[in-house]
Length: 384
Ligand code: ADP
Ligand code: MG
Image (cartoon, rainbow, N blue to C red; front, side):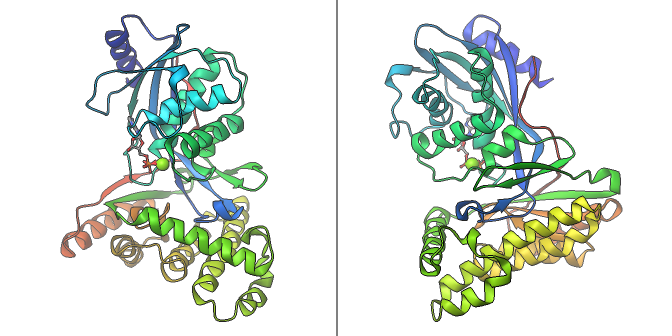
């Protein structure tokens, strides 16, 4: 059991048993891509893959950090020395959480931390949020801070934005902190309203596969920034705070007003139609019509490929191959330029779809993908 392993390793590293063990999951986004920085809707669910944190508090101002997944000895940092932008290593994520808690006035005076994760890093499955939230929840409990999941998510995002220096939205941390098993989380990224939407695929004889293409394009950071700027420009040209404020019914009028701003028009069209797709998926799931979300996922992929232009040859091949092999729906998930795709299939079609994708990758001479089943799982919690 993971709990016993991390407890034992913690004890070897720090010379005493941890006060407790916590876990926080990675996530995939079912629908709602590149909408979060436009104040829009997202719909992630938690994976069974998770980061486990064994933690004890310290009163002497020392933060000691270790990860089973990194070949490095324990790192020791004085909490008084924590400062944004000073740490370029993995330790910036947990150190950033301690910094953000202290910045918010919470009396965190140090900790011993040992981490171990089953979330593959850099695959677009949010190993970073899993790490942050596992540590934040541990400190919340150990120091009796009384913060709820939404508040912890905000602090974790602050850590990642300000301390690590990654301009991420609020989806990943909220998903890791707040998801529930058998549900997807409908999150309004403007007012942070959360609704749990039943999403129990196994009960309906369906499967959701995640295909990790194992490709991360090196230009993804710069391209992400360009898309963000383009969306801001679109909102400014249309006189709204964010693209969220363009109703789907007014899309054509908005596009007409953008005239010959071709790139901005494409970005706006994606964001407005994607928000609408999230609403449709919510309605379909609420009505118990899970199969019908397949075509909505496919539409979302086409929009990301053709309008937002963040797909990759590996992601496109995954989607095309899966659909040809009988999948109900498929789309890239996450920021794009590599990372993972999701595929919705009937239970008995899943093996054939997996095989077809593997064969297509081999024929195209792509790196072999890693495919696994994603069961909507529980959010962060204490294990012992
Ligand atoms: P993603 O969140 O999609 O997996 P990110 O680039 O946001 O990708 O975060 C990955 C980074 O998070 C890793 O490079 C590493 O620095 C840190 N990280 C995630 N999980 C762990 C872990 N278990 N141990 C140490 N560092 C981790
Ligand atoms: Mg991340």
